[in-house]
Length: 561
Image (tube, rainbow, N blue to C red):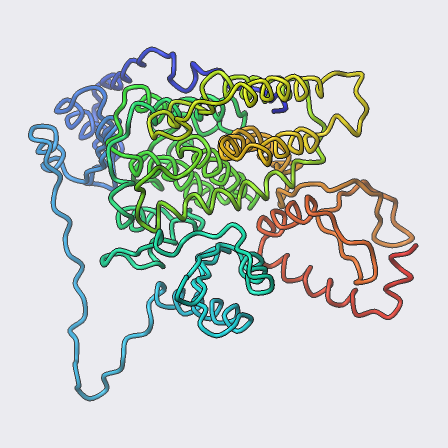
């Protein structure tokens, strides 16, 4: 991937020694007349003496406390009694139940409860599924999975399941199944509905939604983290921690000083940072993958709450969402094996593989036009040589799940060696610009996988791991201080009117009439990302102007000039 600044691994705890606990503040000199601030300070000093030095004790109001236990738990207490009980016995206080208004069933003036947010979302999902169902023959079952995925099942007696509308329509037109999954492999358990299982692919940016969803997924995702999975997780976070955008999420604001740190402590209930996360990974502290994902999402969720409290521009929040998408891409490539293991059951687990294929396909189309560097070409060639030396297994996760356990023939091994040499040569400076494209390397690998089906899944995963950091880099915004963290498609000179001077600007979306040449697929994906980052008020204004421009009769002439 393109080299980026920053990223010392010691910063994130992979090779760092434990930091000493902060020392408590010294006792102030006694005063003759105590002010209210002095009384609060003296009360805090008396409270701090009752706890070890790594506990954080703060004042809350005139007589209250905010006491935070040390990491990794970082529980917050509001009374000395509860904090002492936790310190002594490790028991958390029971939460008080919220009092609700008394119901009036059947009484005068009673009315049905309004639909909840989840019910409204379910109705919207059903409406989207109905729209697609109308375009297919009778008997097809369609399920919509937020944000943009579908499960389409053909009618009996031999039902097949598709994950894209195009594949389903192609099957209706030709009768040949493409990228289909046997419906028997998508058996839904009695306790989990398809909608709940599919919600794990929605943007898991709300921490409450993340927790409620992952706790209801099949027991396979709740099992203990294996040694092979920890190796994949460490490899993933070594790449992520080299990203200079991650550095700002490694700072320990809980024990820092300053206005930002004070705002963080008041806005965030469960503080955590990347430095602490990487130490937990190194110490093997996670009981299952759900705990790992929850802690990662909590880091970015805390950042959202902090930026909202500080009144930061929308671009700062867009950076957090951008890194969440980067983590999701990396997680699917580095933690899941190349293909579903034998005997894998449950819709959520199988749908993760389908979702990975869709995201991978989009990434490869987007990065195809990027010029390949010597470092990127050498990295991809090294993965191909490792594949040949390890019987078609990408890493230890494939070995642990029995994927690609069949020995490769000498023909395939020789072909992989030749393929690695061809990919490595793409990074040479004397190659033509047309050949020095990432798309050329992708085409070579995919063509080899089409000839040798036994290694096709492993090659697809290698391309997925290779493309994820590059896709993250090219989909960054031009300026983190801008109101819109947008990806520049190209630069232009613009002015408001003839009296104003020309100023440099960037195009973040193209508007073309139907008769104009189509927009490339790579540009479409980048424009979609831009729209997701634009504030809603600005986006509505731009869409109104877009419809106005396309309705002008002289539109063809404007675009031709």
